[in-house]
Image 1 (cartoon, each protein chain N blue to C red):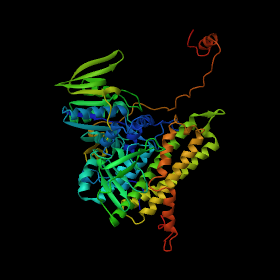
Image 2: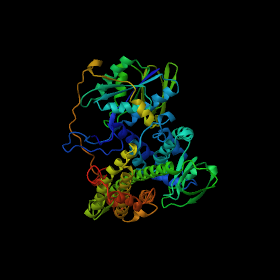
Image 3: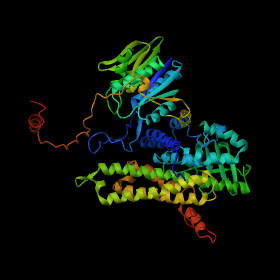
Image 4: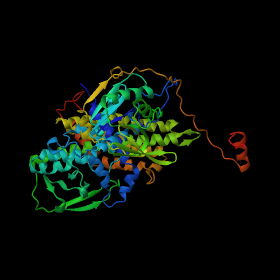
Amino acid sequence: MKVLVTVKRVVDYNVKVRAKADGSDVDLNNVKMAINPFCEIAVEEAVRLKEAGTATEVVVVSVGAKQCQEQIRTALALGADRGIHVETEGAVEPLVVAKLLKGVVEKEEPRLVILGKQSIDGDNNQTGQMLGALTNMPQGTFASEVAIDGDKVNVTREVDAGMQTISLNLPAIVTSDLRLNEPRYASLPNIMKAKKKPLDVFSPADLGVEVTSHITQLSVAPPAERQAGIIVESVEQLVDKLKNEAKVIS
Amino acid sequence: MNFTFSEDQLLFQDSVRDFLVNEVTPEKIRASWEKDDGRDPLLWQQIVEMGLPGITVPEEFGGLGMSELDFVLLAQECGYVALPEPLVHNALVAVPMLKELGGELAAQWLPKIAAGEAKVAVGLEQNILVEDAHTAELLLIQKGDDIFALTPQQVTLRHNESIDPSRKLYAVEFEDSVPPLASGAQAAALINTALNRGALACAAQALGLAQRMIDMTVLYTTDRHQFGKPIGSFQAVKHHMANIAVRLEYAKAPVHRAAYAIANGQASASRNVSHAKIVACEAAKLAAKNTIQAHGAMGYTWEVDLHIFMKKAWALANTWGDEGFHKTRVSDYILAEDAILGAGSTF
């Protein structure tokens, strides 16, 4: 069974992001970039399926600028077999990424596609669902457990009411939640081996996709700084302030 | 000439930093102090899975066959987290010594080191006490002009306290009847290169320790307010921190130069190492002094994590040759009648 797994290049989760002075975007100068944590979980799951003998090949794909190849190499060091880079310029929105991934899915014909449930930069949580709609494949989102069962995959989902287990016909799409697994570190010997693994580069045109944007980013601003608190002298004063200043009770 | 580290070397450094910062936390170091042997088998297992013990082991013995220059950035990262496990000295001192000894001993032990199944401790008379002798499956010990290869069964260990609770130090005693492994000129050469590598290991870790103390103190002085402002905004505090940063930046090049000299077998290696050890440990000691002050002196207390790093910095400054020893080596070189001094020659 071939597994396709996606990785996105994002600002490392440990970095405190800053907006550019003109508010046009997040400042990425000299900022450490890494694999989106949810994508890292997706890679780990795919590699575990291979180690368990369920998957025969793990193909990792990333969409973005040339630098995305660093994240593909990291995924290869974690255990993926080969990489595909769909090279684009500038920001690409989830719908375009989903269309490009659809092109890759048609080329590769995987039985299972695993994506992170969302990226920590855009926080859109859309690409997996859009890919499901475009490819007409069943989807199991927010997965905290994935078990292959013959021609089906059982996905335990983290939903508001608790845990929900669904059975999907393969080929299927799964998006990983935080508790699906704990990703491993890439060992140094595997980092060296990863350099020799194949990595194909495609353009959107190769996949028959036109990159058009439907979203315009108007501005980026940091969250408002938290104001210093005050100590009220009585419950009456607290109620008065909640009622008349904060207007959170009536 | 390209003096920068390669993409691969920097990638390795990044990967090792991510691993160490996540897995070697001050809480875990404090927990290790509560154990009799002071070591965490789970952490060592993770280090082995990362492939770190085999980095300098030749490929034919199952390692990655990398050099001291490849390892020096990783040693810095080990210093950054004050790693208690004996990784740095295994990779930078024990493995090269076994490589130089060669023969059956190397064939027997290097594959075990690469697989993480064995640790080797090296003890020179320069140090008196041997670090991590209690976890070593093989001890390479200098006694007089000889070097001995000893198993744990052949030695008696006497524990000595260190100022750094993470360091486990032992006096190693053994019977005179044990035959030496190397003697005379061969032993002298091995002792000198082991001393250089041990001093380089200390210098590289000192860089990481200094950086960690700066980072911790920048966080603290940004968070701690006085007179309505973060204390880090006051000039008196800023200057203390800037002084460390400058000293640290100027110490990096000599440490990397020393690693290059050792990796390439240059004749200047001894003086390069001494220069590196002096300046890196000076930077780390200044970092310890100034960051205690920036913490309002409470940095010295047991409760504040800063002391984990400063005590290691103090300890490393006096091992593998103290400041006096290394200054003497440098002065012997530059004050010699036939010394060639000047750019490109002195250091």
